[in-house]
Structure formats: structure tokens, C-alpha cells
Length: 194
Picture 1 (cartoon, rainbow, N blue to C red):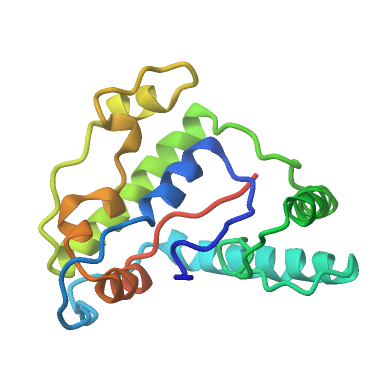
Picture 2 (picture 1 turned 90 degrees about the horizontal axis):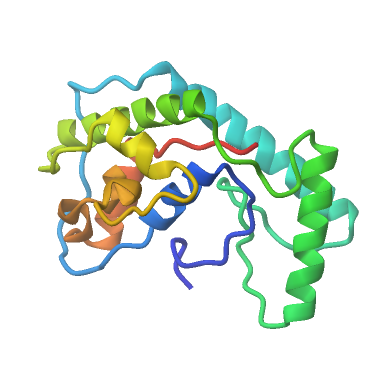
């Protein structure tokens, strides 16, 4: 099971689900992994979120260990091991929710506010700029207003703005999974959980 296809068990803000879906990409071409670009400097949120992810991972791992689970929590807050037993899956999901509450988060995640969506959109633009700096010929993003409007509950998102994410770009989908993984290490996706 690939790292992008493994079962994820995190409850995140509605908009972060878009980021999770972006991880699914085609594995069609091969080539060398991209090298770091001397012209790109990570914005401060990248380091801040890396620390938050590590803290969340460690907290969730500790909590699940305390509940008797022998699973590995990854940096995205997902579980590396797959499950075939629906009862075990349901029990794990319940325990993850309880752990999230004990860690100060909502059990299921809550929808992002408009202000949070604006921050997330800005971070997505940073990720896109990083990918461009590393040689990916990206298509244009939707406007902030169009993207935020498309994220609202009950919105009919036929325009594609709701699904826009730098890692959904056809230029990335044409790359091999190794190239995509290397780029994601250089240009991380915004992350958050509530």
C-alpha cells in the first residue's frame, strides 16, 4: 500500500479534506527527483506547521498507545496500518475521536471559518509558488473569492474551484509518484486540524 493510498483517520477542517484528496495522483512518467531551488525560501508557516504536525502526531500516538493500539500514526495524523475488520476500524475511529478531545481538539473537526479559509488559500498559493520555483509549469489558481465561495457548505462546485489545490494540477499528475513525493517534501501542503 502506497503512502498516498493508505487509510487516513484524521478529522480535519473541511478545507483540509481538499488537501487530502490532492494526494491522489497518477503515476505515469518517470524522471529524476527535483532538487531544492536556491530561489525559494519557505514562508514561516511551513516550519510552524511542521512543529504542529510533529506535536499532533506524538500526542495522538501516545494516546492511542495508552488505549492499547499497536498502530503507527503518521505525520498527517493518519494510521499507517490498513484495516479489513470494520468493527476494529469503528473502535479505532471512536478512540481517535476520544484522543482528539483529550488533546483539546473537536472529535470530528469543525468547518473552517472564512478567515481560516483565507489563510489556507494564501498557504496554497505559497505551495504553488514553491512548485513553480522548482520547475513545475502550473496552471493559474482561481481567485481567492471564487475558491472561498466554492468551499462553503451547500455550494454547487461544478466550476472546479472547490477542488483547486496545487497538488491537483495536471502538471503534477503527469509526474511519477517518486517525483511527486520529492516535490511535496520540498513544497509541503498546508496542514491543520481543529
